[in-house]
Image 1 (cartoon, helix red, strand yellow):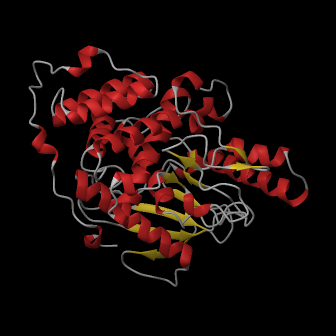
Image 2 (cartoon, helix red, strand yellow):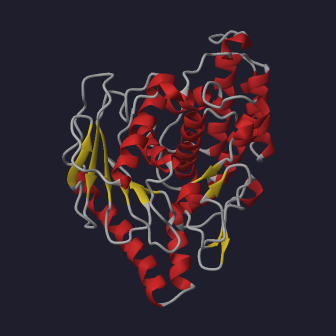
Image 3 (cartoon, one colour):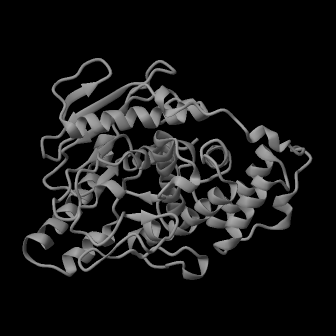
Length: 376
């Protein structure tokens, strides 16, 4: 297990750079202000990590929601926890609910006890900064801005955004994926994949019923777009004169190379995102009992800090065979999805090793607790 700290933002910096470079006055100033806020969080991460969040007794959900009061100091004033409620506003209530829903998703489905797997308290801060238009994981907690009121609204309004940021903490504790290049894009992909599954889980949606949009609830009506990312159709989430056009590719032939955005981590994540979508649509039904188990086990057992796309494709395909049968419909769907995005798995991955005999496919028909049972 790794515990490498890193700071992750939901909205990539290139979006705000584009706004600042294609506007003037207040609009440009607010974009630069959000970039400044993001920089401040990164600069402060060392100090914030000195006092780690204590672990609770195992299998006990604990959440703290703080209000930064539009300042940059963390964590802020405690306004809601599992023990008391001190006049929380809408943002705090949304964050508290999303923390509980995401905890329940990981615990009920995969037996994971919070961010670190050992009952870590889930801390999040709302109303961070002045018109801060982002949500972030800073290595120990979630941070949510109010939005700029022009392009982005409340970042607590979309449960997939919260689950995305919390999953960065899970990835940090399990694989410590380096936050640049392909490993960084895998880091972003995992957060999107589990973010969309939490959203689907709450709505009890089948794969074919989902909109497959990440961050749909935070864009304001003035924006020409539907979300921040689309797993079904990367590159089509938005096309706005000031925000720019969604730059995500869906195939390795269009992989973006460069130093911006830590090597395009929020851009190239569209490739594994689309593979996940293709596999989900091929398998059908609910995503979390099948693909969720495959992706979660791969994260825990096979990823290393500098894992590549190809290594992840190979590992998920082999894990699909380990869990649901080699040469069966589940493994075939995963392998075909990776091939369609330009990452074909070698034939040796598609057959069991001596340590992994074939598993009957009937094992994948697991029961799923309905979202009505969530205790938030």
